[in-house]
Image (cartoon, one colour):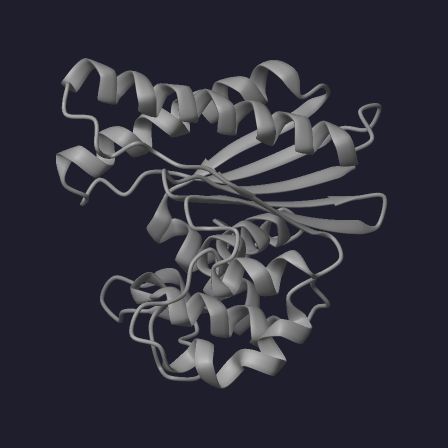
Length: 243
């Protein structure tokens, strides 16, 4: 089976693929190919960096929108091409994607919906044998990743009105899964302990990655894509109605 995690954004999209026991990471971002993190990532076997440039100098509204659309189509085509280049098209494919955060202001959200719709449509149309395509809301993604790595317990709470609930364990810094930030997702991958393509980079650059004020792109999006792909394998703890 082909497992795919896809974190879509206008400036940095991350794609994680596992097929036939091999793992691949792709980044589609708007930074220079010579930027520090792109250079470090580009030398890792199995990691592919593709860069794009939006023309932010265009003042005419219509031309600006068409310029963005052109890049959305280009990125979408590259994503489909990259997926088809590494998966076994005869196997079933499961795809997990991160959804939109509606707390964003109108401009960035519209662009995110624009590229998100373009990518989702292309992937849905051109990737064969899709068994499941699941969109996970950002907060739900954080909670599920927290449960996958830190665990959860089923508890019977309440005295007058007993109620069975699932309580997801906080992370090692006592942060609730729903409150996870980018650094917490990064720490979740390290805690997860499973081999991945960025493992050596995380060891070598851990102090730097952990200490920067703004979590480095495109690593943050590759992290989310990697966790989305791993969630496909995860079976959450269920609350049984007959308890």
